[in-house]
Length: 457
Image (cartoon, rainbow, N blue to C red):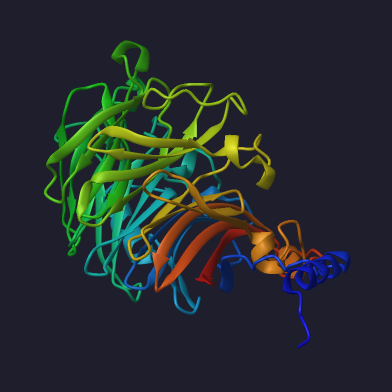
């Protein structure tokens, strides 16, 4: 019987395998792939942008400035983008001609819309807000200016159905007997089950720079019901739509005298306060918020702390003391965790440049998404740890530093909004849209780029 020595044979085989060069394993593909892109292009120059999601659509609302620079002709554009396909409907002008005529009959003179705001209610109706200022003092072609000082902002609201047909119009110029010429109303919107929450800052005389909060509702038929509340000297600065209610960012006129710079107030759908906490002594750093369905005590927030000012008692790192992007989880008004994003992810982007840090929460995967510059991260909601990180270059080319013609055409800048809509992660980014595919043309314009992403794993 011939003997077979197993262990020496295995040792020789192992030596042979280690002597031969082994193929380098292929890196895994990025966790996202681009399903579609839609550049919202009109002949005019796009300025500030807001966006909201609902019913499988993403709604984008922008300022439009004509190419001749005549601010008296400025208008706002409302778009609807199908999250499943990227197909866009729009733009719809607001205020439209009929609305402008109504506003003129009520003393708005020569309106110049700016600072667009949009939300979608639980029934799929769309609510927009623009601030109007009398542009006659700044532009030719509008001869209604009578030389009097005009307040910088009045709030005008539109109600639209899912087909972008306007069904309502409302405005806020003054409360009671206040002088509408010098009064100013800076309104924010948040989603409601039916209608929209309206909150903001009111100045009876904008020259005095003293504010007071107003709060109320805008109904689906366009009825505006708001009232002043709270002490003089503080106001609602931002508002965020959340499941089962909304989040207010409040700010005082004089942080030094007040002893605080930003306060978060979590309200339920009926407007009752669930919790309230002062987050910062400085300029309000909270710029985005996301909630968890069925857990109203939990809120994820993100933003940028400036000049080393702590957030909820946590000081930013010294990577970039003047601009410190963060993402945090707050439960019942107490900090659960915070991440200073630039301190940990600097290999993916330039930490010295300011960027928005939009958030989106996916309840199906219990995953938190964060955008910064052209980078996307998935975080564990329990502790903020990174599950994966990618950027647009890797998604498009397979290489985190790669580039191809897509970038010359669309030239994406920073993500400004993230949503879960139509089964996709949808991002809105500013883009220098080049209609001539990298060769330059007279139709190059700065405008929104809406991107729909599919998960690979």
